[in-house]
Length: 123
Image (cartoon, rainbow, N blue to C red; front, side, top):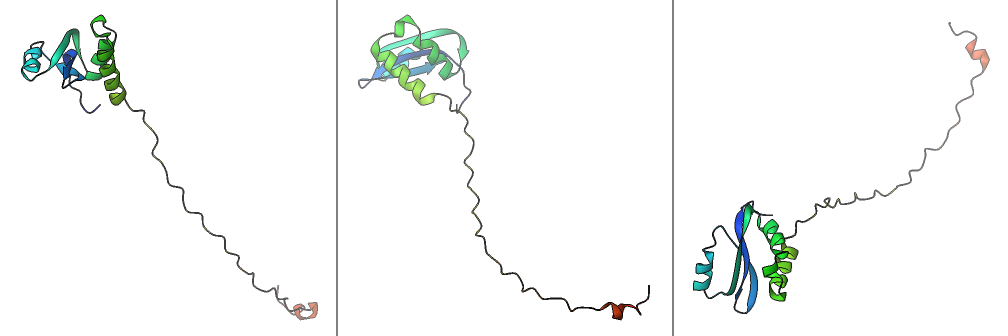
């Protein structure tokens, strides 16, 4: 998640016909939402503060939020904000070197040395 903020109040509200999840630190957030035109405001105060994702997971199992509209908004949020699994970075394959055939130097015969020439050689 992008933030580690903790909230204690979670719920849903309807604005312009669309339900969305809401977060707050105080239940009095209802007044602000109503003032701005939200309808069907349902907020619930949890026992302990938690992150947005954890709070919405708890909200999904509460009886007050079992209707289709609330469950749809909750499921949409959980799908969008689910923690991403870490994937290994893609590694580019190294370019394959072309094999070049090199012609070997022509074999030459060593001059024949007779043992007679070696008799005078010092040891």
